[in-house]
Image 1 (cartoon, helix red, strand yellow):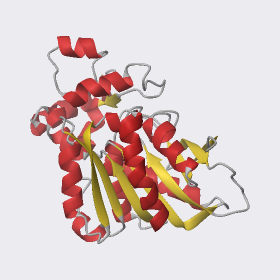
Image 2: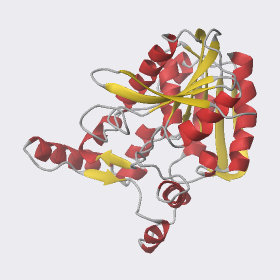
Image 3: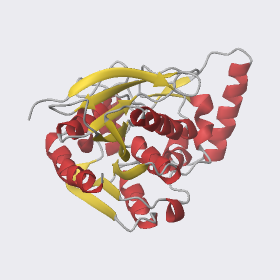
Image 4: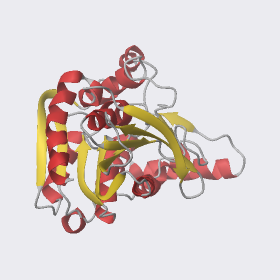
Length: 311
């Protein structure tokens, strides 16, 4: 099958522009109507990485319109302050992506799906609960960022972390330089030298900090003083009531510190959907599912028929 065609587009968000790539299927015909899928990138990532060049591209080859976008305040999208990771706005970004898709004459507004990777998977789940224009959704090794920041990212001291964030935000409001943190060490070797052993941290570093997955806008960065927005947020809140659409959860069976394995089983159990499925890629890890051909192939063997049957 020939490669998908990619168009670079921008569209209006709340008070800034979103940068996105539309992946068009082989033989694309603007006079026809196509099912479309929004693809949401991980935390610290960008549209040029796994959400775009792996999953959006793969779905386009199978006949879908796929849109991968940069989150607000990140990548090539607009918004200040830079590197904010605010879950409410991240979920809102997905709604604006749908707004853009349904404005296109070649998109069937009644056949919209959504997929997300890592933090983008959990954002996709939350978006689907409050926007039922999403008719089916898939989470690829999805991580609930609210839980993660309350636990590992705050060293299991969320109140202490919030106090530090508040002090930093006050300092910045009074003129101090903004404190942008890098979620990862500069290299796998330096991570190991610092005593890091978690599979997710080391494999994330191998993906984001090497030519394997590194892209100019994949900054792996967060504005520390604004991370408090995620502390009281739960991607799965009200899933037992509101998440009624068909759901596919894909996880690897090698648990790591970011918690995709536990989050995958949790949302599978909690979702109200009567058409829900979980696929465990045996022998593969969180970051294997970002770009490694064999586990991605296993995931896509589930994802493609799931969307084709429901969109």
